Image 1 (cartoon, helix red, strand yellow):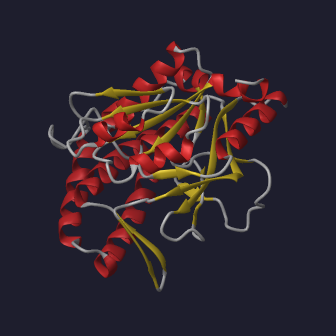
Image 2 (cartoon, one colour; image 1 turned 45 degrees about the vertical axis):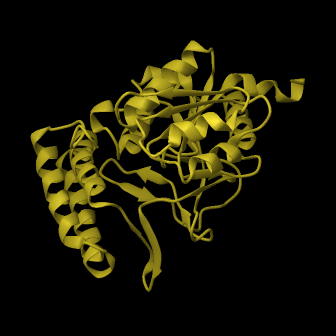
Length: 308
């Protein structure tokens, strides 16, 4: 490795998989470059994901197979511990259905170093998230108002790093020290809202989070994406709505009190209205949403079903 690639020694790429046989090879190809260290944590896939990963035979690729599905938050924390054990300063997390493009990893790292040199306590750098199905659509990062998450306006200057409060986890470059200092990801949530809850805690602890528009990621958000008369429609499977409703009910109340919880429920009602118009099975989704809200109020956490 020449000196120009020395930065790779400070970085670990973490990919968490669960039945991702259709996409994981493309994810590995998108992030691989000579010298990069990749850790895949598989959450007990039953579709051949692990076998496919082992066939890749990429240098510095390691697979950890969990005997059962521990959830994405616990897998992220396991990867974080591995990064710290290996002496890494930074960890880049990728979902199994995300493609990091071009030199985005290097751009994220360079931006983190530049901001740190200027005295910023950088905790994370977010890329630009484009819809994999509709690449002209950007899933914008968020500001936290104390009561709700508001997307950055589309008119924001698309140059240089922009301070924000949250975005999705996939494609994000995290400072290992920052995640360790703030307790990592909330494992009882299992899946969904683990990103925003973690990011808001990091901001409240004094770490700065940034959006780097020049680094791009393609992401297949949701189970269904289709363009409608009112814009892009993103739909999730019914059981995912349970986790979203439950964890956001708990998370918004914890982070912003009853006012934040009110704003979340209002937004969820708007989404339920769109489900009625565009969804495949709105009735089933409504049932999972109601159960999620009730379980969130009751403080129930963990997986909905041990087999999930």
